[in-house]
Image 1 (cartoon, rainbow, N blue to C red):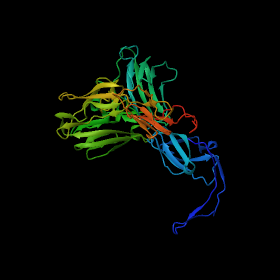
Image 2 (cartoon, rainbow, N blue to C red; image 1 turned 30 degrees about the vertical axis):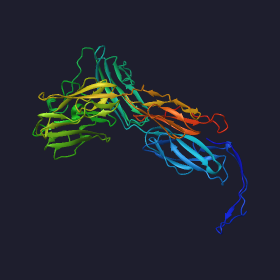
Image 3 (cartoon, one colour; image 1 turned 90 degrees about the vertical axis):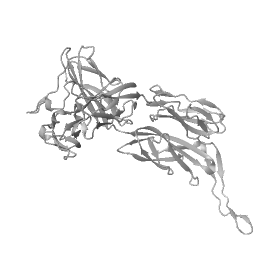
Length: 528
């Protein structure tokens, strides 16, 4: 905020001599008079807004200046800050500062300029937008099997997690199927519900502006038909040699990398001395499948498990190894292979129960087998997939909705007791909004009004209040009650435990127009 004044300066040089305390005044130099009207000047930037990108243009300079230009005799002091230092940081170095992106989002860059000798100051704000692209879109499954006109099997739910959570890409969801066919399914991106309309095959596709995508294959059978079981297509190999659970559908989980192991083959166990396991037929592709001779297979530790060019894994000695397959396009998929001596006599779950997850987050339970070098194949299930979905093979849990669910691990040999884990899913605040500006007199108090999305639930998230200048306006960190103390400006910030933020600019004055000019503040904005 600037102070309106007009001043004329004439320079007179005072010279003090250190002899017997004598002080003489000598008119050795007279500065030319300077006429200055603070009200006709303002602080401006060299650009209207600053756009940065993580992984690209991650930093850029921003220059502030007083317009119209002041005489050289004016010594201007600049101070820079950001409303959200977690989104962008700024170097406080004179008229030109360097702004560096930290994570995706939008915040305000605040510049303050002052001339201490003349007791005037200005303030200006610049919007900083940081673009953070999507790195991965993870779907809860790669295949949904539905039945048309079946009350129990005509709908399914597709959960997803997009990383990083601070992405700024636009995600587009659409249904893909053969041209000219009758509509097979509908998909609601907000709820994740897939609804079968007619017999056929379609794909639910998610695509980010950065180019990352994921797709789920949806097969709709006619009412009464059986969902087809996976079959082996490798010559000389029967279904019994494949690690496929015949009691459930195969899940072709395909992510943005374009290829992934299906079902439980993302983590397998092989008893030392048993038959090798074929991994080739458990691959699912995001596009056209390459021929077998185009795939490159690799084992991270050939002393534990080796793999041949046909994707057959041979156990060598007790331990763990990662088997990786690479497509001609450079896409990769990996499977964790555990070679063990004997069946486990007991299983231990080390993940604390209840486990707390925020909506969209994932958790892989920590499990060990007793005795050492033993193993048991587990099937994971959830009591409520609308709250916490779990991959039946790997045990990866994805929080899909607010509430509580029980995750159970069952040993397929049937000789071990089940393990169970309670998962509590909270819905943290994703955005905050409040008044963008507030004007008050010294001594006044009020409580800030805050709107949250979703509605604030104290069991799911917390909100903490802070002031950039408590000497001007302080705020109770728990209740949001603000007290105005003296003339000046401060920024009141509300921050949720999830990291979402909103800010309100508070100006304390006597509202008479004598001490300061009230400026037009920006409208409320969300700066999380």
